[in-house]
Length: 259
Figure 1 (spheres, helix red, strand yellow):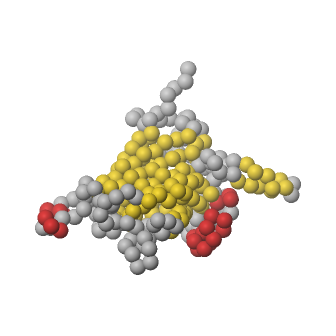
Figure 2 (cartoon, helix red, strand yellow):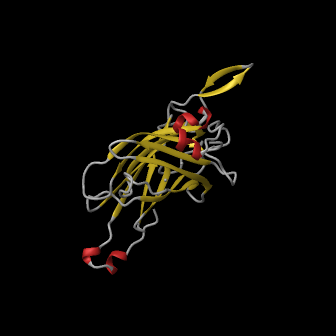
Figure 3 (cartoon, helix red, strand yellow):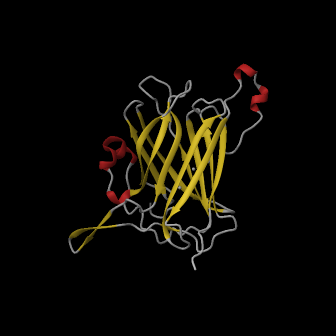
């Protein structure tokens, strides 16, 4: 990610009132969390964010089709060295993470997915990779990739473009999520939860110094020098296959001042 900025839902209400009780729409719900590490004003950091999706009926949510994550104003993307290389979506789908340059990695995480019928526990995809993807507009593109093989086959690969935002938010990560079948010919997978980082924690980059390959840790996006009243806001909007939407928000508290 050349300069980073990373998901979301405009509430659509009233449709249930227009439908018979037997065909009432599912009521999607969402929660969002976020943190900085290290959590210091003005310091380069790793951003961790996550969301959980559910329904008031206790069933798996409909398949997720879009997300929009808004991040705090004042984050400094100018000095970050994340995303010095690009990973092509077709390459990661064909070869996995091994097909992408180490310097394209932006973060990592995990997910839980579920086949959207009945109730029951989801199935974890133990690892998600966040990578710098190709951009046609000059904006940063974050490519998320996950490969679940058993018991639910779910290969997730989607890109989110980092766009400017206004007001309390300085940037937004907007993504359209493709539908993924659980098994060939089966129903589409529901995303239940996702956790991911964007930042240098556990990342190793490489550069050439006098003909030698030297490892180094990239510099993350910097936390603003000042914390707004109430903390750093995050907001997310989620769109679902059934046309419904959900929204969630959270705040990273202001760091405790040291004497």
